Image 1 (cartoon, one colour):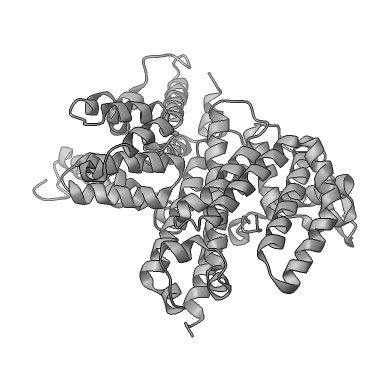
Image 2 (tube, each protein chain N blue to C red; image 1 turned 45 degrees about the horizontal axis):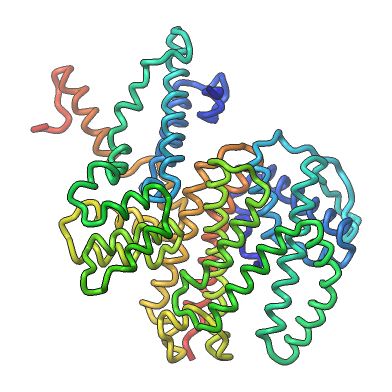
Length: 213
Length: 294
């Protein structure tokens, strides 16, 4: 296994706070929605697992336990949100009209998948067809056409969460200024969860920060 | 490629800027050594990006430098990198190959004085190109293949910017990863290079939209958005659609960089992809906002 400090990108004498910050910053980068739906989803997933292992190893070492011991991977297991994207795979196949196309996209056989899709007459093209066409184009890097196809899929089937997630991931990328849109370390979710945590702390001491919560 | 891929200096640390300059100067020196004094004029930011990406991906040790003097400005003391000579030789060949194809493309498309200038440049570059193509046959092969596909799309008057950008994006991805070992790192570098190549093509088309509209030259955006008058160029939906595509591309490049291992030049690459690309996009966007539709 690689040096956990190198994976986290921090020096050996970093404080616990720096350790956590480094972990969070990298985790946010590896868990970008657009990566999870792109051709490098497997790399992003592996990087995230490597980061979890490195974090656990450093924490264990600092607690005085043997470093690199296994079975400590609390973070890996807690990360359910990330695995969610890969539910594209096995679970979603069941009710799919295009199970074969999905399998090929997941295996990286983009051209074969597109050939099957293009063989479907225009009149018979469903919301799923547009979604899968969008997936192929996103993997190729044809973002403009992918955007349009996702948008058509969402219009035809507004209730579908899979299509909406893919469209939103791309849409979040469609604003200028990478730093401005991701740079901040505190978004609305962070604020809410911090407030909730503070409330819990107050409550266990008998006080209350957010009445009724 | 056209020099769009640059650093964004305000966000760069002084030592990172020095490092970038050292890469730039070393490439310039290598060009001079390999292809003669005049080839130094071809030096571009894009080939500098190639060196940065390649050395970052190779997970090398920290670069080593020695001091020297710039022959064009002897008062200036430059730092030259002394290791990684192979990256610079490849980048020099890449510079020559791309410059030659650019000149050839201009000779075909341009009119009047510009055509003559391009023909002259072509003739000048031919000897260097042959040398570079002999040393790096793969580069010449990739570039030539891309040029042919590009010309075919232009003759068909392809009305999709995504499709029109594909040959040059694929070519850059292939050029940047030509001698990398297969594996994750290569796939990541390929994706980044694809996005950068695509971004350069889209930016060039966006930048030239007005000129191409006047001269009737091929421009995928004019066809995709069915531009019929000069006012159309500044219509909100046209500008928004083009910018959305460009933003998606630059953000994808920036996001993907996180997956690349290797620390050499990393902060500079981050600066280029996360800030530099967007700064260029904004400057062209402002060009369309400022100049009123006449």
